Amino acid sequence: MNKIFELDNTDYHYDDDIESFEYREVRHENSDNSMENATYNFFIQDTNANILYSNGYVQQKLRIVNDNGTAIAEDNVALVNGGGLINANRFTLGTTEIESNINYSALMLQVLGLIHFTPDYSSSEATNMFFYMDTSDNADRRPLKFHGTLTDATKITDFFKNLVTNEKYNQGFTERREFTKNSKTVTIWIPLKYVFDFFREYKKVITGMQVKFEFQRNNSKNMVYTDENKDYKVVVEDLSLWLPYVRFKNSAATKFNELRLSDKNVEINWNQHSIVKSNIFLKNSSGSYTIKATSDEVLSLYVIPQYTDRYENAKENNMLFDNLDMTECYLMINNIKVPTVSYMMDFEKEDYNRIYASLLESGLNTITSETGCMVNYSNFGKLYPIICFNLAHHQNYTDTNNLTIEFNWRLRNNPAKNYVFYFILQERKKCYLNIKNQDITMIKTLKL
Image (tube, helix red, strand yellow):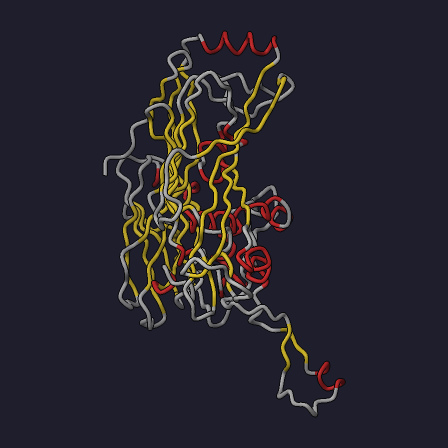
């Protein structure tokens, strides 16, 4: 296994050459925390430090208050799953922009968590990320309900006989509210590798280069969920980075410095996600939409249908999605249909096994492992209808310099409300790092 100082080898690192590994807090440079669209800038300018960004975290401290700034009491309100703070983000290495998303980052983090997290992970590390997924499209905190009419004359035996499970109970909302009620401050730690895909695969120290991170916060109405007839806002008490600073043992430091002086170009590859939103469809029962790729290799496409009234509306949970009573969908990639046989589904009859299987395949449920994901079959149809297309199986279509991806769909009826689609593209990215000059060269993207 190679070492984290071996900059010319981009596989996983081995840490037996580390003398010290210390997390340090990095504060943002400038922002007005009271602004709904505040931008937080982080500049790491110590070019002599060895920082292992792949093990870093974004720390958030959030608090729900009334619209006038006063503390809430026992209001039935909570942050959305994951907190929903980051709406846009950008990562720049030296003078080269490596990754950016200009909108809807919180929704993308929600989708990727639902797909890639496992139940074991969600009950441990994901709780540090405030990941408590909703189990209904309600803000109902009662796990049980009485079936019938409850009166003063109701016998205790009849009471328990008619006590049944409340299908509207939202376990995730209930758990999140425990952290945020009475305007308590909740602290959320998001691994930096979940915000920037580059750090999922480049697990090396970065040194000799200035690094910049930019985050733009979300609107409060996208960050809270409630059934109260009141307005709330989210106060960002703090946003900071916690980054591990590394000091090597003498023998490793000598080899590391030799590598820094070598005139090598290292090829770095990673899978990067980006999200875009379609135009608003005015109650159309069918249509098509073209998604623009930015790379010459597209691996996956996730399609998220949602009614427009969930956006910037605290009484409609924007971290839940809507099946729209869709009956068919498929892609046209350079005029070739993918899959050859359309995805067909009937949400009324709970018949959507094929597209649910595609969701499992997009996570960790592969040929060699069966770990599942966070979305069960029932909730897929009711709350999380994420449509997945594994385009890595169709590289003869997608590995091209003239890539056109068109999503086509059909609904059972004209819907009563307007709707949109969010599209998450997973693309293969590549750059070259000149170790000696600390220069990054991004590989040319598609001409759009």
